[in-house]
Length: 258
Length: 310
Image 1: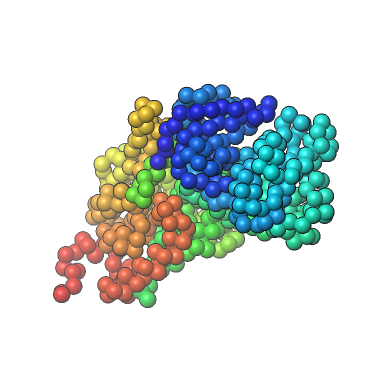
Image 2: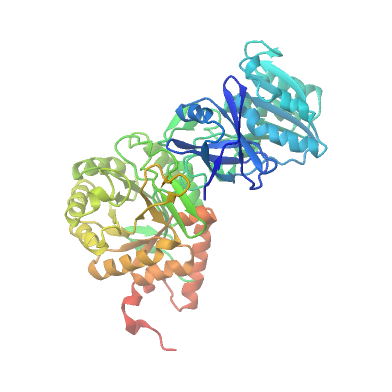
């Protein structure tokens, strides 16, 4: 069920993120993820940051040990891929606001691309710790998205949280949907900002995963399993879950504060 | 509609289909979800004395709809934290059976006391995980050890104790008989069959642990044979496990001697709705075959004279 492929391209997107491209012709829809196996190390869920055509891609942020080793993969190195798994963004809304925190842009960029290609207008509120970490800023602009930036240190765009930018955009413009991916605390704020304007919000969640088949329970959140019920959730499904934005589960299944 | 409610190991079950240990079971909400989807009861993930992360991925290899190979490595939050998950499931009204694993009879007994204190209706002892060093089959692989562990646990707790038996020694019936001698109220059989997958391109096992355990429809005939042989040797109830995907599979196990059943892998292929479907379909199948109650079909295949005239 895994396909072993040789990585064809490695791109350092920002100081902390790397994109790997590989041949994988199976059709995918923006929002879906694959399980990326680094032989001898581990296998991690990765949103597809490139979903179109026979060459797919993932964009990896350096977090734990394995994600650092994923970043050290070079063209020609072999990895195992299975998937794509999970649901995806509904691309039908015509005016979309994307709110991206950190490496969340990996899941959102292909959605923006297909959406714009289908005639929708997309505005991106792009947040990062500092200017060099703004992931896919030029890629979003090249697609034709309107991009507004926020950085924690003010090195580019508005200083502070990207949710403030999102809140301002929601006040001044009309949107049919909000797509967001990033830290859960950020997504919670996005939901709160969109609520008074009745704009539906769709959140892409990242959780610890093992089987990705809805069996092992590692990615359980409330009554859902992120691998098969997600990773994209409409906000009403998340709002009353006590774990959302507060707890995640470690690999033993313990609830650990975020 | 034929009556599906059964009493097994001193526990009243609204239907015979239990959520097998290791599937969902890590979170209380998932256990509650399996219950509300129609499971007759839910068995927790196997819980140990301390939190355990399990093996690195890959921990699983899926084969279309016929099998699932896993070596999760007994990940679990540990007995200190897990009672909160059981509480969530119990508040939802679920009949919860607590699965535990340990390295020796004394640790099993200590853990059993703590698991029993959570309010579970019974314990299932994991004597059969095929891929965890120092646990599972390594503890429950001989009749002597099975008897010792079960005796230590049944002395320590008052709730019913179910021993989950391995098929990998070739003598599941001997292990089941040992569990009965130790005081078990029931045995469940089978756990997964020891198995392996290799990636030919990378020239290495797929699973990080190498060896794993095979579950799913591929192992149903093996499970049936084990239940059949166990039923002929023991007087305590048998819980059938292994590749149950349809009402007919379930009834095969019942006719081989099972009073209750566990379903796990099929949740992966069909989703949790499999529980509601199995219960409805089994009741209908029993009707068709002239059984008023599930209980009436238990072990009938052992009595050739029970075949109705054409």
